[in-house]
Image 1 (cartoon, one colour):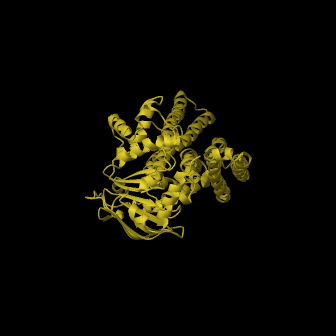
Image 2 (image 1 turned 180 degrees about the horizontal axis):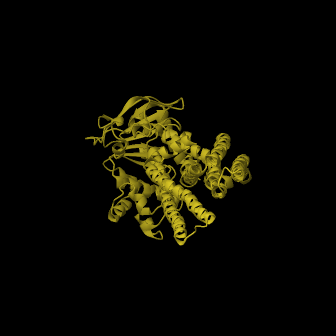
Image 3 (image 1 turned 135 degrees about the vertical axis):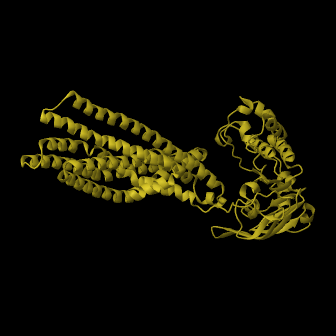
Length: 576
């Protein structure tokens, strides 16, 4: 139990100071609870001796009022501090996880499902913010209060104190058994919660395929199975704890009964005064109230422990080395030298070398799965190379800090993601403090000003998550406006026009021309018109550059490129 507390407070970072202050308030609250015993004993003493006076009544009343008021203030402060620390920790950890994810190799996101990340940042953080905070604080408060009352009981009669101590030891023994059982069951709950989130996301994100291929029954069955499995795990968790909770409560109640019976017995034997007997009987009813509550909540301590481990597991994933220097290159020549890269033991890039001069256009073509996108990711350091080097401006990209390196690159991908925010803010991601005039200027260059103005609230229109409320061409043009706003010297276009309808293609091509003017361009493309005028064309197949040159040169060679061009020309010649 103490190890879980230590781990939880260490996990909370700076917020642990608030938890410590709340614990200090908890000690005050516990002391105020224990202070009620002397007040009761004084009143009983007066009643037994027949010496009750107005002064004694006011004295006892004052002690009770003081304990109640100070206890209420301490409890209020402790509750506020716990809430601030709990929710503050969850918020800070979500931000830390998001920042950490920025610097993980892209391979991590291929290996791990969106469901796992979502589960950590939602379920796990919510458990820590709400459940964990309440569990930790109620458990510690119950132990503190019971311990101080036990000290007070020892002060009045050591024999009853020993009974109370024995009851506490038995209680903690039963609690220890529950913790061990929880250690076996709690991981199943965490795993089930994660699996449920994964299935819900899978179902919602694939709803079009579910409907289109009439998979409604099959996919619903998988989702329902995940829901049922989660229900079974939660029921199992509760049923596992019930016997231990009953045992704990039984120990508490029996200890109280023994304290009362022993007090009466000692009084009858003449070895205890009546006033102490009555006082100890009263104590037997109040001493375990806080401990009983703490015992019931402590069943969830193992879940807290696992939640902390799960959050830490994401934070401990090895990030790329981002502690480089803030470098501003004097030129933007890039060079890939003898680069190898493998993913999951599969070689993707095989000893590639190429030079890309600044202010030139390099087109990359080749069969699907040949390594085109991976090569672009290595150039922009989305991944680190296994061997060889990639340089920008004559400096290895690893010498740059990640943020200073990313300032030099803008990206337009085939699949554009827009955030659930205003159109203006989605464009401003390229330059967060840009005034509206610059946003509109970038939008006009990207040929999207007109359709934006036709939206219900213009630039202030909130678009759906992922850009769901816009067409593919509209999303592409907004992403180009975003890249224009960033104004980076190197532009990487990954199949930027692959899925655009003919009505939008002319405007999209104009937008790309505005974006790429006087820039270094690296483009992955399958359309002949987009590669014909490139300064150099790289034909990538099976992780190697199998051909390299200008369009005219490659057309004179027998190989993949000429077959690529001929197949495209044949496809264009088809008519219905």
